[in-house]
Amino acid sequence: MGKLFGTDGIRGMANVYPMTPELAMKVGKAVAKVLSGKVPGRKPKVVIGKDTRLSGYMLEYALASGLLSMGANVLLIGPIPTPGIAHLTKSMNCDFGIMLTASHNAAHDNGIKIFTHDGFKLPDEMENEIEDWILNKDINSEHISGDALGKAYKVEEGKGRYIEFAKASINYERLEGLKLVIDCANGAAYASAPYVFVELGATIKVINSRPNGLNINDNCGALHVEQLREKVLSEKADVGIALDGDADRLIVIDETGAIVDGDKVMFILAKYLMSKGKLKKNSIVATHYSNLGLAKAMESIGGSLVRADCGDRYVLEEMRKNDYNLGGEKSGHVIFLDHVTTGDGIITALNLLSVMKSSSRKMSELGSEMKLYPQVLSGVKVKEKKDLNLIPGYSDKIKEIEDKLGSSGRVYVRYSGTGAKCRIMIEGPDQAQIEEFAKEIANVIEKDIGA
Image: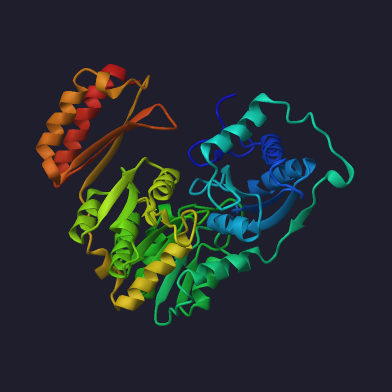
């Protein structure tokens, strides 16, 4: 059996290894085992949430059974955004929080995300300890009985607590006068996001908020904004907000129907925070896939962009290590470390709307302050992941292209962390030129290690 944890928990097709009830029960047992002895004087307490996938029922009870069988108490929250579980883990004094979700993936997938007592995702060493108990040790060898077993409780107020937490992130600022369209992606936020915006006074139109277990992310949400765009234009709304299946990210549509992606959202927020003296080190953290335009825009206002490895967990690691308070990805994961411990689409949207209100400007005006550079993303299937610099002609080709682009472009090449593929990203002022450059790099790689 291979490694279970990827860059964001355990994920796969539901009811196919590793996302089976048998494995979920082992995960529950292993989590409880890792906690045993670390919680003096009481039973461990674990909170479990889920998105709206049909397989969530199967995995939720299997996971809970594993925890209960090892003496942990379980709080079952039901459908709630992933950042809601991160918050509740901390606010309800739980030892772990677990979210069942495959985020933006289709309904046939599911996943397990685990948070520590402080609401942050698991550090590598704790993931490795849990994984070791699942894969290499006899987790079923210990049997307890009687009052040593755990209890499970359904917690009805979990969503309400998260709603209040989200509103408090902008100090309950009123949103009267704003007309919004909210796309809930038929996902975890369907029963919380509408209340947040309505209770703050916004006029809202909600779409894709009728989950049936199979329609999560189905041509809707942050990855499919066509329907949202049409609704924003037909409703003459000020802003469209597209969440993904577990609502830890968002994509925004302005009043003209244009996309405001995660990079533009981060810049709008960074500029506002800088004007208030609240952006630590006048810097934000983003990944290597964030647009060059974001770096240029930050420089233009006296700030800077710090780049981290791809994945929101690596953005967060850099933020915590070097004391930054704003970071994220162009996909719409935005982390306000002053408020939350993970990406939160609803809280990001609230803070963006707060900037609109305070500046009395339209979203299109705010978004236009950052210019995106043309970007090409392509991939080459490979038979091995050889050191790129050992591929004949690779280093020379990269230098040649970088020299031609100068400071007006950049090249980023890396192997995929999940498949046998080499990913190529190039940015520059001319779309046709960078497309040709991407083909040239791909040809060099393919000639030596192409699959």
